[in-house]
Length: 292
Image 1 (cartoon, one colour):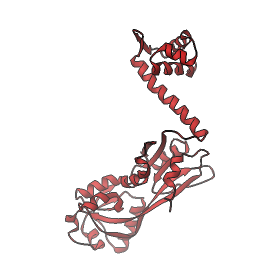
Image 2 (tube, helix red, strand yellow; image 1 turned 135 degrees about the vertical axis):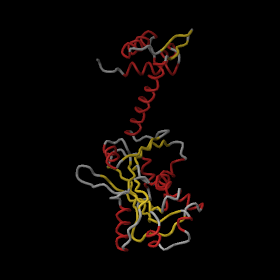
Image 3 (tube, helix red, strand yellow; image 1 turned 90 degrees about the vertical axis):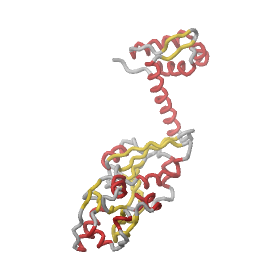
Image 4 (cartoon, helix red, strand yellow; image 1 turned 45 degrees about the vertical axis):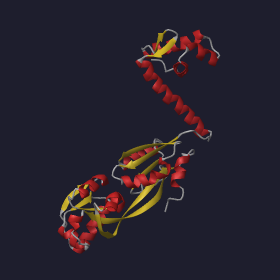
């Protein structure tokens, strides 16, 4: 099959938006027959009629509507390319952010807050594993990745890790679970606990702390998602070991209480980028003054 002809697609795109072959031909300074031939060649290539004529109007067929949606995306991407490489401002700039699937949603919201209300910015958010997200960053499919452990940096892949926040980790539970007790060791020895999965920084720190105290905690759940830990804590399944930012809404209403901060245990959040000749200008605004 021959390569797709984007000139044909551009003529179709122009006629579809004008809704009139004569008007488009005049605007492009071409004959009607020349424009019509281009569209017919595109229809032959796709194997579908793109227009049907109703009186003097050209109406998109179902295939034509699908083709127009794709054409809009293609030519918008072309304008974005020109604006980026020529370093010109755009009416609406997209920023593509990857976030570790287990990362606190509240932290993500705090990171995004400066641009959430901006009409000139479109936020595209993806979640996944660290490996998948960093691969997307290397492939320039993402502008930044939010994770809680910095990746290795070498001469091949020069990741830049911006340390954004260091959050303490607390023991959190319902008022019924805490029952007025604030002694952390006594609580962990008495109540079931909701923990992150093994090999995470928080879990390693918690296991070391309980080992030093000689406590063998009863584990209610091991969870790889902070949002699920939050729900389990709200349901009273046990005392959760997590950063307070994860449950800040519940703490503010009293639905959950903070028994206390676990000594020497914390979580650090990073924004990881990669050196680019044409960095996304919105990213600079998000990171400016926030790294610690």
